Image (tube, rainbow, N blue to C red):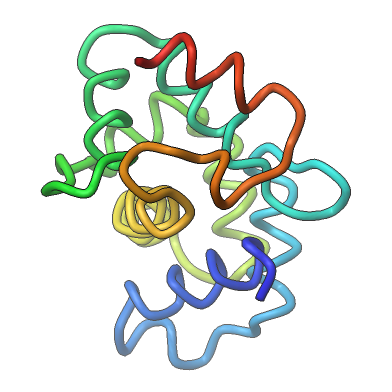
Length: 140
């Protein structure tokens, strides 16, 4: 399964009843425009780099998602700050939910996606994208 499809399904699942009527292909297209991609699929190392480049609490938060322990929470406000309110609003419009619902769904989906795409903090065991080795070198 592609990471994009996994992310889209996780997003819809996180919305519960509000996600029931969403179109999977619309969510996939929206996520492709919102999150870093490479070759048409989500680029997890580039997504993690967004967090580590922000420094402080976001970098520590992303590190918790890479490991096998408990994931630190990521708020809807964090989503808006990291991805940009305009981009989150565009994504929300595209998938058919309000901006706050989209941000909330993303705040639940992103940590789960990064956690599922990594094992013990090692993206390389699951990802073959360029830059993964240098990214991990910066994190650990």
